[in-house]
Length: 225
Image (cartoon, rainbow, N blue to C red):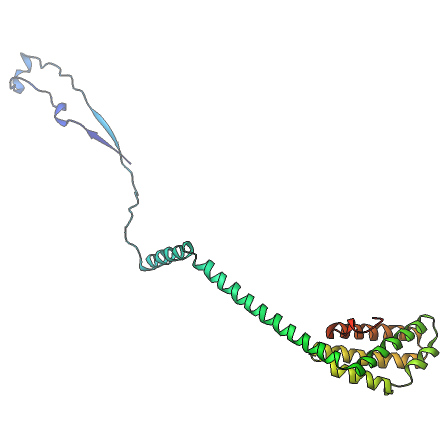
């Protein structure tokens, strides 16, 4: 929208030194007066937005919260919290290390005073070695003479008594169950003269026994593992 502004409206009216009437047109000529029109173009703007200085309570709250957050960050508040959490984690780790060390010392004491049970387990290592060689040579008759015809054999009972004495955790007991299950399959496969089944069952039995020995720390006490 544009509007025309007149700087001096009176300049549009001609001026005369003497008053003249309409009857004097015949005797005098009214001099032409040069009129300078000064026109200023003013530009008007529509739809000019007006801003209200009003601030809502919610905006003010957000602003205050943001300022507080920045202030805390600048003062190292979060760094301090992180340091506290790290200290707590370090304390928990140290406690776990102490517990594990205590259990290891107790386990070593039991192992050191249980030569009979270690003998049972050492005998198991020798038996598994002989059975493995016999299966590799496809001589299941030799494997059967070492294992026996049933898992109720005396040597199996002695091995399990050693297992129970040295085992404490659920993970160790799980490996014992895996060994006994695999050993049962091994005896059955050898009895049936199933060479492939015997190989699979032997690997499972040896693997479970090795894992158990590692968990209990006996792997360093037994020869041949």
